[in-house]
Amino acid sequence: MIFSHTQISQYLRCPRSYRYKYLDGWQEKETHAAMAFGRSFEKALGAYFLEEDPAAALFKEWGAYRDTPFEYKKADTWDRMVHQGVHLLQKFAQDDRVQIPQPNKDLQVKLMRSLPGDNEFVAYIDALGKLDGIPCVIDWKTTTSRYPEEPAGLLALDPQLICYSWISGIPDVGVVAFVRKQQPGIQYLRATISEEQRREYGRLVESTVDRIKAGEFISHSGIRFPQNGCVSCAHLGLCLNNQPLIDANLIRRAGASDLDWLDDIVE
Ligand code: SF4
Image (cartoon, rainbow, N blue to C red; front, side, top):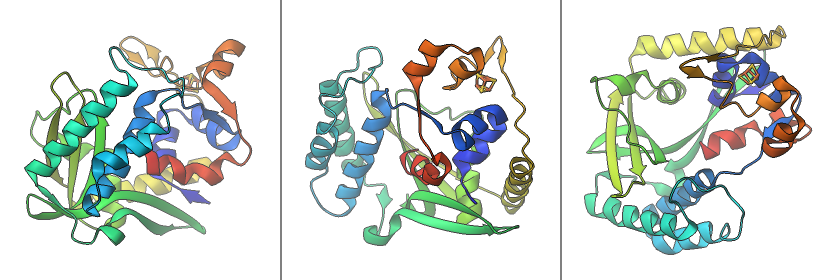
């Protein structure tokens, strides 16, 4: 079987939700504009590093969703998002803090790692390059809220970045967060992942895979204020046996786990 960080983190959040998605095939419908916009924006960044026109790439990619009936957050509209995107791309070029010397091979890099028992782990890394001159694994994020920067060192606890460091063997990691607010801005964040953190992540993956293979899918409901894990869970309709909620949020597909690597591309 092939595992990914998305699968491991979904299992750790709620094993029942993992079973619904990866074994029973209940996939979340794409109803939110932000996810599709994030994918389009990443294609535009790829165009920038390939010395093509990033704004044209954004219009082309995001243009494919112009008439899609997405749910837009607050004041967001298709037009507002594309204008914010173009502004952020211009600012990113002016800042010139990120270099990807070999964009043809160092964008959307697929890395595989063998796990015990004939299993494998796959990750798609957004970019391998330099942030402020320091070689690192780079993750792009499009978001509407700024990443917390305090207390110092917080970013080094991000499990996805620890995963990228573990699979690549590269200690330095960076996040470039494109923040779509009233005044769009870019955060350039860096952290160093220790050898011990990488070892620990490897152990976490192996023990989680063992529990999945043993068929342990006990629910971890999180419905106790202020935690609301169930309220934001796509599978809530299944747990509540609420057909309208199921119809609104989910679509059932056979062989869902075969397509899991797609989740890692879009994250
Ligand atoms: S609704 Fe709660 S218990 Fe049910 S799958 Fe989601 S997180 Fe788990």
